[in-house]
Image (cartoon, rainbow, N blue to C red; front, top):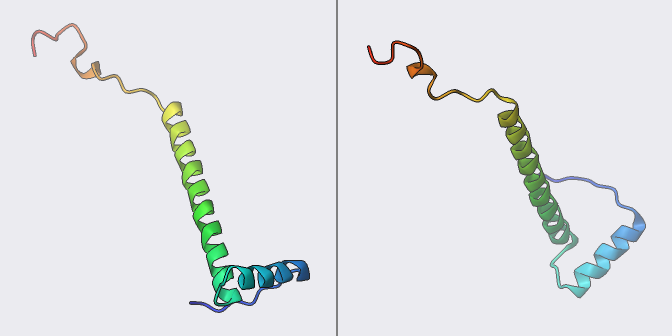
Length: 79
């Protein structure tokens, strides 16, 4: 793990302290790791959805391929 230094407002730190003691977290670090992990999972899901939407828009903008173009024409019977 990579150590980080973060700054939090005092009100948030007080809430974290209370939550850690009430919900029996081993430490503030455990609480913060879990909170960050949940946020990362949510953001990854949002990014996947945005990429999916962009891909669908790309498919919609593309020219539809004519499946019968290769066999079209007057000389079809001669092939």
